[in-house]
View 1 (cartoon, rainbow, N blue to C red):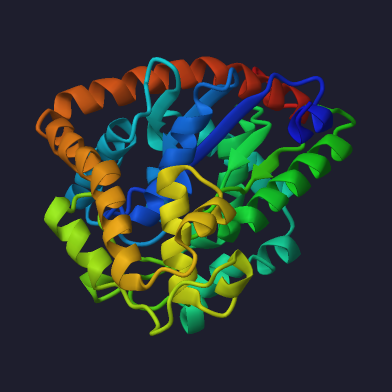
View 2: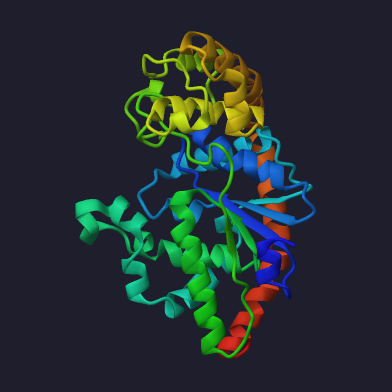
Length: 344
């Protein structure tokens, strides 16, 4: 029995996760999120995946760009293999229960909890006084995203683990305050060889669409030639690959490329090192480039195909939103009843 099932025996096992439509999907988004989402959808557990456009507007978004990016992210989900008949796929703003439950959670969460959220500090920087209230309250909305479906598992990157822990705190306080066991203790799922993909130009920094160097990342819209070129030019050190995994510890660029290879080939890092340990990068990089092109170029092509039919993307999102609301609406209604809202 999984940890989530042990922690939440009274709840239907259910996965929820989402990605912001902030544009510029990268290999990091694919390996850290999309591929994991696709892998989980055939596991016999209900899977719900979201384009979190309400989170996106916590910082300014051009309206037309947001529409395009929402469709592009949806196309990315679909091209990566997410099946909208096996999973529920929708954009957050089409399911108003997210925002409604978020207000309840704004009244449950404590300021001290929010002040400890490191992502707000990172994003707001020295201009915290100029940040939006939405950015500050972002973790309460994320808790609502998860708990409006009574989700028991949330696949996330390490940088979002703190927010899932806050979700547990909010659920526990709500349950305690109202003398109920209504919300589950959701478990973060953090696993895989490349859940945190690093820059191809600096192995100490996360791969990011905001990096000024396009060579630092593989975009999910890159064609085969661009993918291969970026892998061949990725920063490395002069030594050959170590013979064992432990030798990667102080070599961030080598570790990053090996992790990417492991994730794309669906092997453990130890298994990869058994094959490539001792090879010079002049041999390993072409291997990685061929693998990356084989796995990623078809996704790029399929994304472009979906983007040629925005009406079909909108239809898939609307269908997913209707299915999502069938789960979320009764959970919100019961929440209102517990809180004492008249007419709920």
